[in-house]
Every structure is written in C-alpha cells, then in structure tokens.
Length: 285
Image 1 (cartoon, rainbow, N blue to C red):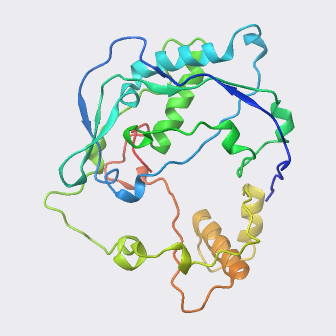
Image 2 (image 1 turned 30 degrees about the horizontal axis):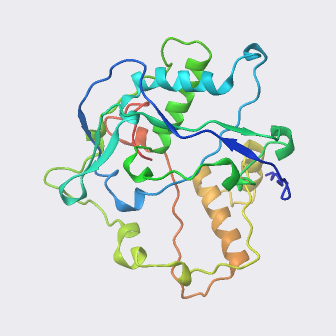
Image 3 (image 1 turned 45 degrees about the vertical axis):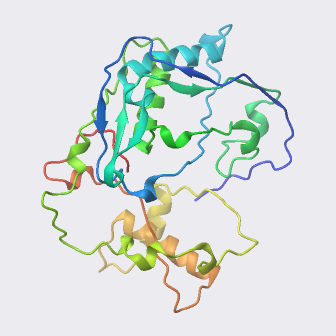
C-alpha cells in the first residue's frame, strides 16, 4: 500500500487558446441513440474532472502535440460519433443522444511548467486543478461515461500514433441494460430508498483535518490482508478491500453509533449477466 505526496506550492502560468469544437473528419450517421435505464438516473448526472498525463514520445519530436491530438480526435470521432453529439432529455427524464456531429470541445494550453515538477507519479488530489482545466459551460448537454471515456481516450492515442482504426470498436447496445417489461424487482435496492437519497453532507462527519490520498492495493497487500482473516472465512478480494476500507473509515471518523452510513462501490458486472454483456459495450458503470 503506497501513497504519493504532491507538491503544494507550485506556481506557473497557463496560456489557453480560444475554445473550439473538433468535428469528425468524415460524415457520421445523423440519428438518435437511446440511453439505458441506468443512464437515466439523476444520480449519474455530474461533472468529474480528469487529468491524463502522457510522457513525451521521442518519435514525435518536432511535431506540434496540440495539432496531433486535435487531428487524432477528429479521426476517432468517426468511430465514436455519439461523442460528437448532444444529450437530449425526453418525457419522464428519458435520455437519448442526438448524433449531430457538432464535435467535442478542445482548448490548447501552454504552461511554463514541466511534468517532473508535479512530482513522481502524480495522483489525485492533483495540485493546481483550476489552472490546468478550463471551466466548461453547458457540459450537461454533452455525453460522457467512464468506460466510454476510457475507450475513447485509448483510441485517440492509437490514432495519434498512426493507426487507421481503433483497436476497440464501440458497441452501443444499451438496451441490454433496460428494465424488464413489465418491470419486476427481485430484491430491494436499499441504495435508492428515500432515506438515503435525502441524506446531506451535514449528516456526515467531515473533519477539517481530512485530506485526500490515493492508496493502491497490489497482490502483496491483498495477501497480507487475507492472512488477517480466519481460515474458515471465504472472502473475495472485493470483500477484503471493502471490509478494510470500512474499518479504517470507522476508526478515523468515529461516527455516531446510531448514524446510518453506506458504502457504495463500483464493480464490473458484465460476466454476471446471462448472457454476459459485450466486453466493449459503452455503458455507464
């Protein structure tokens, strides 16, 4: 288990270009694509800042990185064309993507700082976030979800290196995540009950001394934790990490014994479906 401490007093300037829309380099289908019932949930509508860092590739010396990235985005949008569209909300909050081909927002920035100055292997909370990221207006009309973004960024990297097409072609098929018709709940979803939805930050202890750190658990750390468990318990890695996190959280914050606190984890459920979901389906996880 390791952590990385970030520099906190780094000062630099960023010169940004005017925002522009990068459109697909070729015509793309003009259509509507429905999102799944999972995507429709209001709890999934938020903006999460992400910073991706790439080391300099010696083979790209002499090339303008902004132009390389801009051109790669335009090529990638031909395959991931819903990303160039806009979200639309219909009756009963049903979301769809209007594949307009309008493009994605692109801003070139030039900073008088090097990656090395941010420390070894920078991790969240990333310093100087406000200086590095542009305040995007109207982001609520744009499409994004974790897996889609990861696949899209991977494809951009491949296209920037000269690939003619991405290794992973997007599969939409969001209908696979829709509820049954008629709907039939087989067990209670306590995470969606009204008591939990009405909770606010005032009900949760937030010490002023709290800091954000990133911890990584590899095979050695998991093995060490597993040795602390009685042999007759059969625990998955997810069970071990969840129990460890919950125990540390309780010890650190010492909440009221009568306070209701819930831990929500993101897991990959593709293999749990029958039949399993496609490995590259572009759904929200």
